[in-house]
Image 1 (cartoon, each protein chain N blue to C red):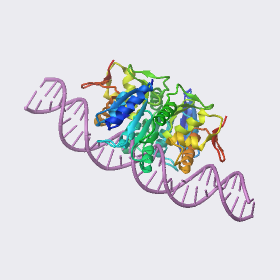
Image 2 (cartoon, helix red, strand yellow; image 1 turned 180 degrees about the horizontal axis):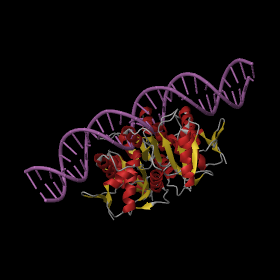
Image 3 (cartoon, each protein chain N blue to C red; image 1 turned 45 degrees about the vertical axis):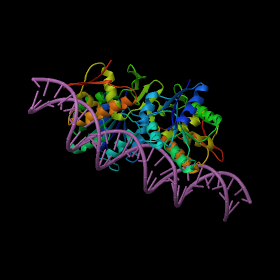
Image 4 (cartoon, helix red, strand yellow; image 1 turned 120 degrees about the vertical axis):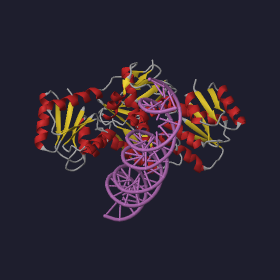
Length: 221
Length: 221
DNA sequence: GTGTTCCTTACGTCATTTGTAAGTATTTTT
DNA sequence: AAAAATACTTACAAATGACGTAAGGAACAC
């Protein structure tokens, strides 16, 4: 079963969270020493991290960034501040979803399951016809060439590949990129699509992504 | 046979080079339009690039950087300026070796073969005992985790893995990193080793690299 | 032809990579 | 034990890449 790490300084809350998780069959571990948190988490190689933002020593934001740079799995931010600003900040630092405390058990579990599904390690390469994509590292292969896509490029291309040749809505893409469908910046998605197309062009992959006006995008083939 | 792209603005020299290459059985192509060179080269997906530094429109240095960022193969810089400064500059921008013109046919071919050997696409993952390395993308795998190493970290680890458990000399490592064993900065190698060790430690791979005083380094196991 | 939707380009900010430099630690030699 | 050689670490700065934002242009629909 999936291994979850809980980072929460309030002992009560921590206990309650690990309790809930264990009853649901997750393998739950909690961080109790609040220095070098990122390293501790990495050592546990978790499948998902529940991360509180208000921590005694480091900021949860820093930890978030640090974990992401180590390629460590989905991060679900828990925050008692219900200030929108902070949450968005968190997402931009690499968190994959967020929840404000207090939150209902089922809501938490649903979000977690959603994230776990999204981040499930995909075996092997995904075939894209004239190219392939490693869905875990976002490495693009074509013939003997290979190229590492940026995180955003990879996420978009992966979403398109998984639904090929169907249209993928902008909402879905936003979710893949920023973990939520709300507060999306239409234009940011545009720009990232332009960038992906440009990168693909450098790989002699022209006109792969088709625009479906009013709906979204789809991969040809 | 290997596909070589020649970038050289002097028509005579160009002709001579492609001639030599074809007689040796290489598939040689030459760039004759000197704008958007990097893109032209990318479109040819070469196994090796012979790149002159003195070019009419762009600087060879820029092209070099651009090609490297696209993950394009080994670059051998040809330069008529025999100023040491420039050559070193080129290597630091990602070139893999350099030669000053004029140079002897055999010398050129030897260097090319050396580079081609070094950059030969390696199939599959290299097993490192408690971890694996994708030698093409420098992705490090351990269990379900994966992490992209930086270029320097990857080159060092690859060299160590390929010679495991033998000692790899600093000279050899310098060659892997900067394409030449001369003019190495001892300390730069040190620093890169420290960085690799630190990265490995974050992956719970402690004490993998052993120092052999006066000789070099080796991987345990 | 007017408005909506989509695309592109330029810009600023932040993080990462990397060589350099300077100092510290460790081992070997004398 | 002191000195010298070798190895290690940390801090700094420059260069690069990633990415959201903003602003304007292009394509399409009606």
